[in-house]
Length: 190
Image 1 (tube, rainbow, N blue to C red):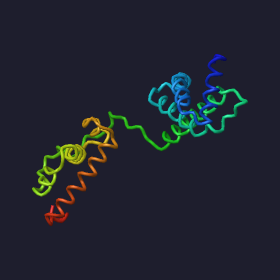
Image 2: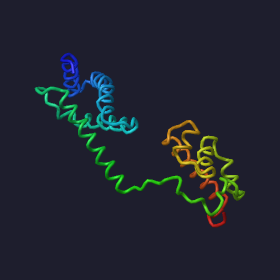
Image 3: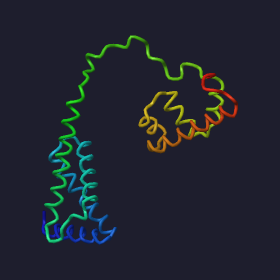
Image 4: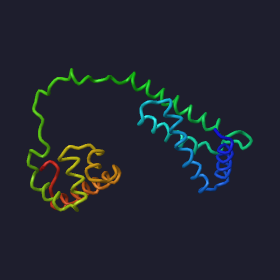
């Protein structure tokens, strides 16, 4: 690492410790590609590499108060990055011990034909409660419960974040429950 960059990053970190948010943002912005290269040389999986980089940035943020100004900056950052790589390797090892790889060639065909989502007709009360929802809430409920998509798949199809989709679906459920309660319809009647 060049001495100029080392001094610049060290200065920005000292400013960040004093509460200078713009310089801290500059430091993180300039440090991110460097960390991607550092971690990327050690991990071949780009998704895992990006996860580790994000963990390094979070760790750096949490530990920024531990940086000592009389010490060089880059060895401190490298130590954080190495620790994140070690943590990743440990997690991957634990996960592979718990999980079994499923070979698609040896998967048995289902004994029963898959049911098309929404092949069955909903009770009229549910249809009415669903129809009364705003479009965004109705879409969330339909994607998750009637089409059987995961939250991630449904969010992608709706063009929103997973969190936003969950909020829409939750509001839809509440509104449907309130509508059914107003109409005096109990769950066991559906």
